[in-house]
Length: 332
Image (cartoon, rainbow, N blue to C red):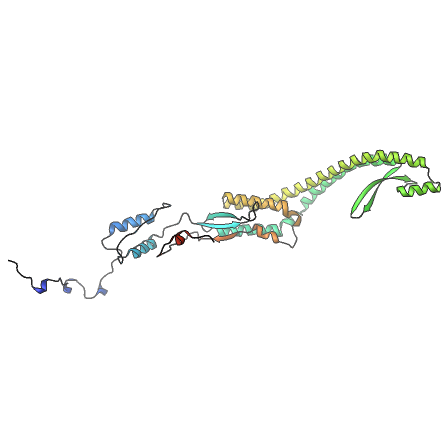
């Protein structure tokens, strides 16, 4: 036989007098999740561990404070992002339609941009005057003097032989070009072929004289062709020597900037960009230094497309509907 329960014991009732306070304003709020110490410790360990590719899955009933707990731990820990990088694009001299990506530590992108801008400013405003210094002019003058002496050593004996044979060298203008030819000498003056025929008609010269001079002229023209080739080679060597002096000085001046940039930003991509920049200046810009047209400036500039503060924490993104597109992005 069972005894029926009275109605007042069928439902538990809290005795407010046993709580120890009058209102909740008198109670210190609880911090964290109650009764989930192991779960909280595991979540903290996962957030503090730097393991690329690691994911943490938090599971629980709706309304139990999962998101609140994750946000609070992230705010307390402020995990650092060792993989956070600044991304910059620069000109690719080998493939102009494919800009080169340079990846730098967080906070270094803008500094790299400023350093390269100083290099570009030096190229634009100061490289030309620096290559016109007195010391460089003296070196170029010495090269030119040596070339002129070598040129005279080739031409002077030939000119003397010409004069002894009654011939001389004459330069005449043919449109935009200058031609050097051999003419006979009569009374100390060069005489073109058409004028020599007039001398014969007036009896001031004979056909035998003309034939002899033409024979000598043919012999000397072959020698002159050989000497002209030697002279052109001398001038080519001179121009090459002057260009080498100019390029060596330009590389030395630019190297003061590029070496410091390579040292402060030790990345293979930076080193390659600096070397290609110097090569481009040497190959394509020296002749135009000091001119107003600075269209090439864009080739020596850095476009920072993603930057971070050097001490910035990892970005925290809350995505309530994580789709494939939202997680991985798209390319249009």
